[in-house]
Length: 132
Image (cartoon, rainbow, N blue to C red):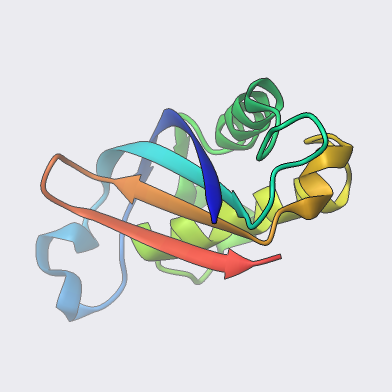
């Protein structure tokens, strides 16, 4: 299996509902480093997993929709705990839509999966991987 990874980051504010979250029930900030890993069993005709420039730009565009936002105020996330795991899945969904829409180029149609990993620090992260 071949893979290609691009990295970016974004900053948000949010709070959580539920005693399990302890002090994180109050409004707090987070800065995430995001790794998006694209996978496929065979390289495309150009010898690529996916165009690295297009992948990086699309990730940047998706993260710009979340960056510097208080996610508690976003109608899309109303009633949801925007945990690291939840956000990894949300970014995956948006990247998958980008592949389907052709924004990563025709070669991206051969992708079989994407993994999105959000690192909260050098010792804690969460990820979501799904098939396309």
